[in-house]
Length: 335
Image 1 (cartoon, one colour):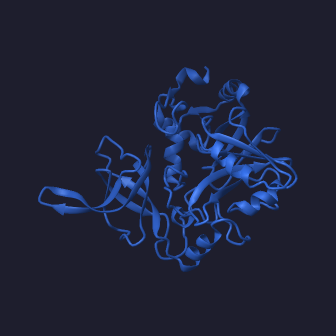
Image 2: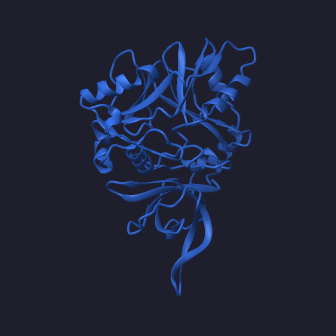
């Protein structure tokens, strides 16, 4: 059996072009703890080489990278001067090169920004999307020459950087070794349930890391100055982010999921039944989870009652707190 024999491709959205599922999305989700493998080859890949690469990235981004050891996975953010999220990258250094993947289509803009910031330092930045593909697999990364990354946001698995001209062979070999083919449906359901946001999909141009539960995962609070650091530190110390990310448990009797970007409103009773009231936020990504049912991520105003029922794009929803509205940042460990 080859990978493409069972793949049902996603036809639209940010994950278009890779396998959405392989015929049994619920079975694929159950395999995410053990043998699942997901083709994420639509994601962008960049490389940073040169002897100054880690100290340079350390100075530009939210993460502590100066003493990053080879093989240790990390997540970093590029923020605007006002602390808003612009880019996220998920990387690992092999001792000579820093490799990272990012959202589909985001690599050119990230490379362009980094290239502008090189000045006289000994670094080279390149878009490697045409050369390398990303594959997620359950469990720890195997020892060997393959470039792999695992971090707090790797959903209990690891990502491999695979040469594109070797991708079909790699996928087939892993299937022969017992891997279970899974699609982005299973990967997204696991990610959403874990409260891990995708930058640009679960966030907008106003989002700061404090709102999305990214402190401690993608933001190091004890490093020196970087672009946007003042906003992050001020909000963390005051403990009141303007908005907070929530996990939405959606009405399972409805056969549709709310569209990304649709309004999150308070649910209010009326003579006609429960209707949307005041808008308090926005819906991010959503999926059908094999145990939790339909779920989504959302951003709501900080002062929204944590017990208030909501309506997400026309679908009734309850909220589960991911970011504490009162104290800097508390994220429930879900992995």
